Image (cartoon, rainbow, N blue to C red):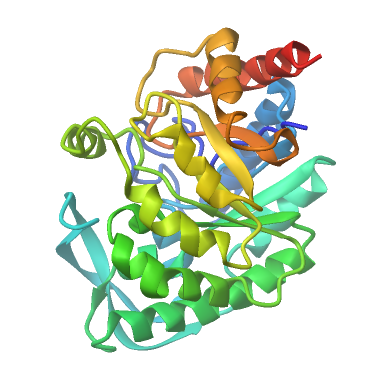
Length: 339
């Protein structure tokens, strides 16, 4: 009951990359960088275990960005000539690569870090991949001319890597789809179908992470425009409830999401965000336990998985460590309160 995990990303150590940035530059190159990525991965596996989390991940230490880390191993993408593009419905600008020809994998994408993580933990291992709809929103299309067609092309590649990660011993494969909260009609119309294509044939646990974004200023500013009730989930949850995906990860603590919307995910495991990634204030165990108690009004206890609202990549490392401890301690307190 109440197995704990993080959404995915964790801060990169200062010796690996720039800190407090969503798109950090690496501090090394070549084999030295490869070893630094491995060291950081092992560091965060140990930190998650020490904090008492039940499900651990690689913290995305080998990826500059959660989308681009996958794209770097895809043929048909021009990284040399990036262009500035508004992403997440122009919430913020980013320098993005261009899709210039048919998409194909160059080979394995995350074999190195997945096998490294699997070899160094006996806990359940989760691995994250970007979802096809979010990838489409993070690249410039110069080839397909149709975002749905391109999303399904990416979904096929994601599926190839996901099946290989399952063979590597990964227990949970999670697709990150923050775009589902931005393009709600498209998400319900074809985004969930593309997600299911990415997860096709998997027998391990499958998950999708939907949230209102990292704790960067552009996302904080956007949230301030959403009013007193954030009901974006309401449009996508029914489609996810009907899907083959096992788990849904959502933002909860310090959000304006009406908690009763979680009832729309009946039959699914729900990873409830009980740690705020947009604040450096560390939650108390009591706050975490209270958020879990609120969610229990709408999610059966055997289906509730306490989690972070989103990834913690841009966060200060010491704050992230203390938030991991708060997650574990608050969850333990919730268990004790239930007797």
